[in-house]
Length: 279
Image 1 (cartoon, rainbow, N blue to C red):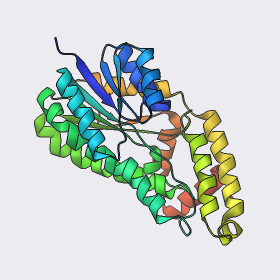
Image 2 (image 1 turned 90 degrees about the vertical axis):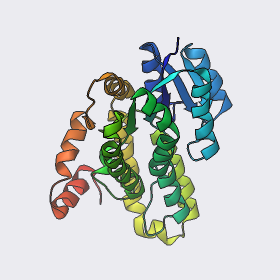
Image 3 (image 1 turned 135 degrees about the vertical axis):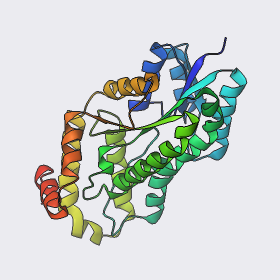
């Protein structure tokens, strides 16, 4: 008998890993996208329902291969969870344009490419598509413009995709939340060091004090972030619901930021500066 399956991108750690484990425990066969062979072996050993697939979301051949693996297994693709993402940070004045392109390639373009590859199976099952967004897509701040912009663009594309697919019975949802306890914070700080090294000396002359304040704030956000399991539970609810919500705003902090996002720009700027303790 075919199994109900869900394809989850970026499943090796953090939110993606929590989603994969939660769905597997609930009885789904989870095709967990990972980029490294070591992660594939580790996830495979954690639950018999998890079937890791090597999947770099920026490589078209990987997308096609992941979907073909599900098709050949004869499983019913009940859901797609676009979770894979990166966070690029830095002052826009000096940010390498290739880094900006990579930000959009992973966070914005890849989810649509993945949806295109998976939609023949999702249409057949009248399945669900869930995109992992961020409340940062509504409210940006210094140095996180690339990440915020990529999530804002993803939100707009998700809105359009949801309306386009409504007649087919494929429901599309977007999840928005604030900080979460995941390795992305450490990866982001490591990426900041690499970006800083690639920038001219005057970048830190202009932005050094601001950069230090923002790094300090990221450590606060990391410490106070919500458990990724909460995101995973919401994904499960979206996949199970007869009528999933168009958007799920998760957590008190995200709800507060959603309100702040509609304030006048000058008021919003002052609020961001005060809350983040920026110079």
